[in-house]
Length: 139
Image (cartoon, rainbow, N blue to C red; front, side):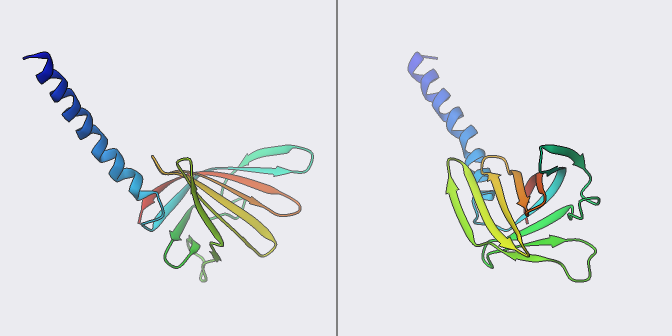
């Protein structure tokens, strides 16, 4: 093999590796509905007291659905009436999809890494704050 053939083969192999990555990024760019599974929850109070809690103890559902067309995020669970919240702002910046909203005296923000679907959610009210770590999958 000549060095020119090796270079051409290397470029083709590199392009082939990049195709699946580009397809995966599209899964987390706001073009498809997502399911977010909550993995860890940290609860914080004024004065810097923070502790890891279970989603159940924090009264946070384990799963959320993000419907970009309806501009809505909703819980998935056993509740007779699932809670829903309007996505009031959505932006893409530096490889992140950022969603924001407010409801019932609480503000929330979701940051989704477009490359792999990792999610960090912050929820706050005047007395406490929660940081949720999760993972997304296309719905």
